Every structure is written in structure tokens, then in C-alpha cells.
Image 1 (cartoon, one colour):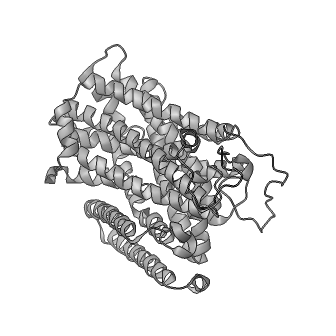
Image 2 (image 1 turned 90 degrees about the vertical axis):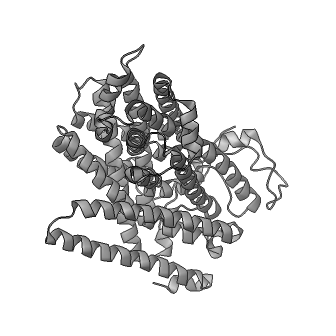
Image 3 (image 1 turned 90 degrees about the horizontal axis):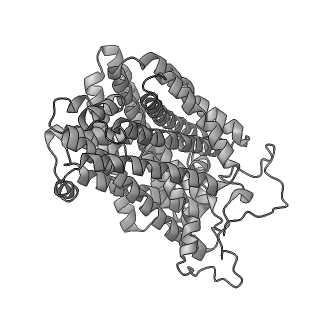
Length: 507
């Protein structure tokens, strides 16, 4: 069912300036059975096939890893401990909003044959695309530090504290080489490994769910009945804020190009979009269930207790052990296994995203191992420093985590705004541009996410900023930040109103 073509063309050379960086070489793409059918109508969408759905399944599950990273798990456990099951409805709708954004990212990649970072390089003047690139890299580094620290915490739990945080960081850094090793065996093998890691998370947290024995009625009410209070507003904002990951928007638009789809054949593009929509929806339903497991376990065990406000990734395993005891297999180790699977899978996808972001924005044609090494080093070096400094203090790790959340929240507009304008542009998308209703819904979702993250930023800086010098620095940064967002919006509105040949003149 899956094969690679024997191309006589040589691979891209570093000196070849006529061929821009591509997400996947033609020889690496998955060949879908039936795509070369003789006499096929290019405009007709082929009938549904379970075999083809299986071959298109993969990119959505890699994308869903960002919904299950250690940062999300920490948000889940804190929401459960502080708000009980009352925010499950918000978790469900936040996941649905994330699905919409990711489907738009996939639509852009399939319809154009290029990913978001490549299109930003082509659409924006040099200074603007360099700012967008730096912002994307900062968001990726912030996410990667959280993911690597999460893995290191899991390793510390599973080793009974024998391995300190910094050694766990070094062990996690080796995933770069695991990634390169797996990539050499093809896209499908890499996707299979991620499927195993997601299954590991699902089984671990389902086991915990079974141990906790939460009330089914309370769980159902939490999902169906919207409920929000002043005490849980911060957790509610956190639940929505951590769903949209900037690097994941870039990643998904590239992952969908791992299948052979000719953008010039409308029927084949629509077919690919249909299958990607199905597999992405299934993947995020699974991620929602896993997040639900974590939230309800901590809601059952710690909601309304004195320690609810103090639970985080670092001490969650110990608190679970004290609450639920040993059992057949100590729950602390089950939590550690699930957390390790979440951390390892998300750090590997971070390496993947880093390659696409750097290659797309800078049009680099480096060897895979070199790009992966550069991407990994950007995150591992600061993470090791962080681990050495903060290893002995849970409170300082929590403060660091808040700053990293702020760092990622700041970057969200610089992924969403270009995505929504590009996917709305007829000159680029052709008949696959989004319609007015979907466009309105997408902008409402984007605006909601940006406002919520703006609230997070305001709340954080209001409590953390002290001293006139720091205040002046924050004010200057905020002014430049808002000015760049306004520039992106106004520029794209102007470009969209012009004909295709004129759009490159807007600088």
C-alpha cells in the first residue's frame, strides 16, 4: 500500500538556488494507492476508501501531540485540582477551536503544496519575515523547554530521584538522534512510533482514571453545563490559552505534504482535505479524552483540599501516591510513564517543527542531521541552564513555567494572522479559499484566543512588573508588539484588495 518512487532526478543540492526548500523530498513522500489511476477526472473527488483513509492517517496524530504536551497536562491537573470538573466543557470547546485552526493549516499546506513558513517567506518583506521567524523560534524554544523539563521530571520520578533534573534533560536531548534514526526509515515508521507514544499516554492516564473512580454524573455535567466563577477564571484562561501552540500551526501545514497530492488536481486536493479532516478530528477527540482523564483524576483527588493550589508537574506524582496509594502498580510510576511519553513525543515533534520553521523562513538547504542538531541545540542549551539553576526549587520552576507560557502567548498572533489571511486569499488558494462564513468563524476564534492570551499577559505583568525601569521596558515592548500586529493586519488587508501581480509591491 505504501511505496516510494524510484526517481532518476538527483536530490536537491545546496547550491541549487532554483529550487526552494521543500517540506519533503519527492522520494520520501507516501504514495497513496489509486492516485495514479488512468483516465481519472481531475475535478471529481474520488469515492471514500478505508484503505486511503489509513494511508492519509498520521499527520493529524503528530499534530495532536501539542495538545498533550507536559504544559497542557499541567494545565489539566491544575484545572482539576482548583476547579474540579467545572471546566470540562471549556476543555471540549477549546479543543474544537484548536481543531478549526489546525484544519485551516492543513488546508493551506494541501492546496498550495507549500507550508506556512515558506509562504511567509514569499509574502512578506525581509524585515517582517525575519521578525516572524524570530518570534516562531522563540515560541518553539519556550515550548521545548517545558517539554524537555517535563520529560526530565518523569525520568526523575521513574528513577526514584536517582537521576537529577539536568541528567534527565541530557537524556531527553538524545531524542534528536532517535528522530533522525526513525526518519531514515520513512514517514510511516515515524508516525507509528508516535502512535505507540499516544497509546502509552492513553493507557497510563486511563489506568489512573480507573484507580480514581470519578463520578460519571459529575463528569457528564462538567462537559455539558457551562460554569465559570471568579475563582476559576485563571484556570479557564489557561485551558484555552495553552491549546493553540504557534509552532504547531506551522508544523501541520508541512506534515500534510508527506502524502503525494498534486495541487493542480482539484479532486485529489479535496480528497486529501476530506481524509485529513477525518483523521485530525479523530486524533483530537483522543487527545480530549486523555486531557479529560488527567483533569478528572486530579479533580476527584484534590478539588476542595488545602493542597489544591500547590499542585504542579514537579510534585503531582508524590501527591497522587499519597492520595491513591500503591495498588498493583504504584500510581506515581503510572503518572511518570504517561508524562515521559508526553514529554518525549512533544520534544521530537518540536525538533520536526523546528526544521520546517528554520528551513521555510530562511530557505536553508542543510542536511537533515545538521538542521535537527541546530534546532535541538537552540532548546537544549537554555534548558540545561534552567535545570541546573531551578532543580532544587519547585516554586522557581513554577515561576519559570509562567514566564514560558507568557513567551508562547506573545507569539500566537504571528502564526494566526498570516495563516488566516493566506487561507482566505483566492490568488493563492484558488477555489479552496475559505468562504465568508468559515472566515468569520475563524477570525472570531482567533480573536477570542488572542484576547484570552492578552488577558493572561496583562494579569501576569500586572503582578510581576515592579520598578520604573522594568515598567518602561515592558511599555516599549508592548508598543512595538502592538504596532507589528497592526502592520500585519493592515498590510494583509491591502494585499488582499489588490490583484495577484500587484501584491508583491506592498512592502
